[in-house]
Image (cartoon, rainbow, N blue to C red; front, side, top):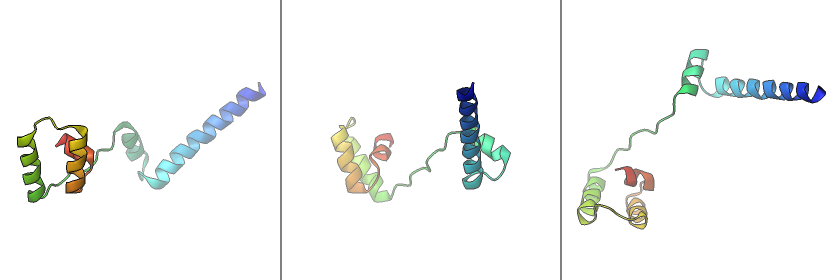
Length: 88
């Protein structure tokens, strides 16, 4: 049973470390911690410049289903993440 006790100690140590780290570097109280654990963080909405929107609309008019290579090239030209271009 020594192995079982050591596993329990390790489990509780890891659990304590996890909550300690989250409280130290994240939420300031228990309610925020529980809420933070239950919600997925969302990335801030991207703001497109008028020039970028014009370029995106032009590209969409030429091809409504661009390939991954096309999206990557457009993302690089506009200095946005490829995922931002894909979702747009």
